[in-house]
Length: 339
Image 1 (cartoon, rainbow, N blue to C red):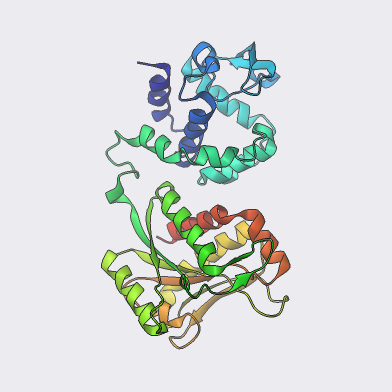
Image 2: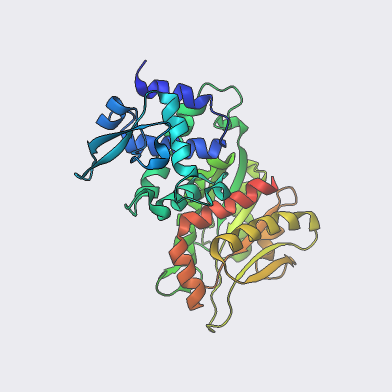
């Protein structure tokens, strides 16, 4: 058995951290150690690129090592794989990473938090690690009978992109500089990619321009119904001629107050992620804007999200700074909590 296989076996037994953080940290070790192939991992059982600090004295030894940046520094040397796993969390718990516990159910947010606190200087670090989440999940759970990674156990979420490729919806100027349809296409595809981390399976549905708004909506939601999801979410953002309106609102059908909790869960996550004004969740009648989508399916709880105003300079900059993935994950967290 290789040291990498031994690390995976040992980490499978670890119950002190959430599955989300186990996935995130194992993905981190994939990147940092080249799946256990780096000299630091092979010779010193340091899979995380951990530099020696005095707080590590009880579980690691200092060793001189030249990192991938070509700079020689003092790193941690561990005597066993279990010491490395324990040492990693000592490094995080007692280091400058205060508040990491707030991200126990969101691996990407955890990685952003520790990167910003000094774990890595590479601004693409989070992207590089998150792109290994699927690999890490498979390594940790491929032998578990009840693992959430088994596709049949994932709850299905339909993601409908607002507007269409011909009529792209509202436009948000710089720094977003994009219309609703292409922006939300990115968000939808990100939701598909990372949904399994939240116990979900997301599928994107595009509205097609057919010259009739009613036919466009009815057609796409007929396809949604055929797929049989637990719920649906239609993606938009607001934009008006005035620069004053701002904030997030989530719409739900007016004749089913039970869906309000779905809308509120997603709204809460949007507000936490973007920090924009709360324009509340709003019951919507069939003939109101967005109403036909919300009332299209009696059997599938559906909401319509307007997370920010692209026409408001502050909202626009906030959304641009947060990025599409942060919004995609906010939606998924709200959906997961609702389901």
